[in-house]
Image (cartoon, rainbow, N blue to C red; front, side, top):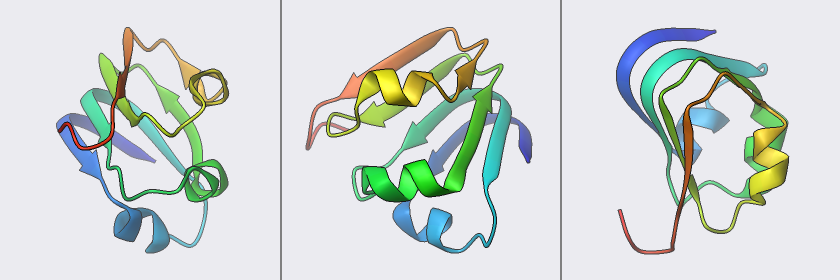
Amino acid sequence: MIPDINELVISKRDLESVEEHVSFRNIGTLVFDDDIPYELFEKKVASIAMCDKVVIPGSFPKLKVLTKCKLVKTVEVRERGSQ
């Protein structure tokens, strides 16, 4: 579990470096980089909980991402190339 961080940006390399599923909890702003394929996100991210803002790439299916979220205030879909 990755808890209690004000702002965190996650890259493809970050997710590839973990052996197991990872959970994010109590993050102010959690950003998933555009370089992450949705399949890797689906495989590695177990849950996202108690975050103020989660930013996902426009290529991610938002409703599938929301199934991993609990007590998230805002989910923002970022269009490609705008960071």
